[in-house]
Image 1: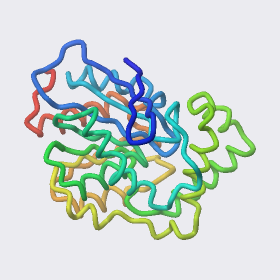
Image 2: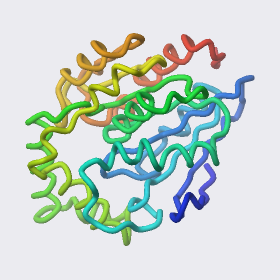
Image 3: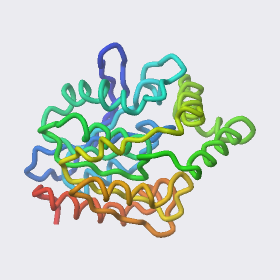
Image 4: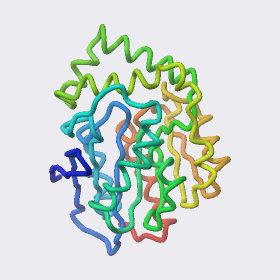
Length: 264
């Protein structure tokens, strides 16, 4: 794993690359988009295992205001995920991933990946893997976010997150929490974008996810023509960490359908 920083527009973004020990003949790179409280370090070993299982390079970055990336000013706009997809992700991909790319996002990152696929018409995009995506707002999601607020203020969540975000701690948490709990955010939806996605999509969710129900997968499957779904039993919001091998099996099958050679 190699850590570096890339200047994208006016921000220095923390970037991590995992290179497979044995690379297959492919120009494909997997790009990881983290969750609403995440950063590159919170992918833990998943990037390494993904690179080894697929035999392709894996690239991840911390969005501005997260991890060790450059700071931002609050409040985040309520359209922060759409803005990331439309304004910030394209120059990052153009600079650091000029070849074919597979977007794999978790939670907010999954939403950003789907939003990008629905509007960019990117000829280099091979497919999207969306883990625990949010395409609409559910009451279950909001209740869990309210609980996260209580845990941050009164529990150990702030201490836990500070290990990953350092000086960006308050920006990372409140930028996410305040946006989601704003009454005007209740109408958030990327359903229209889903209808214009033309690349294959794999949507994955844990059946015990406290941040979303299977309605998210159903909505994606009903609007994206080339969608497959996977429900991971006994998994919560991060099945790629708690059930990594099962998730990797689904990912390998999906990538194989993209006519990309993967390790046997």
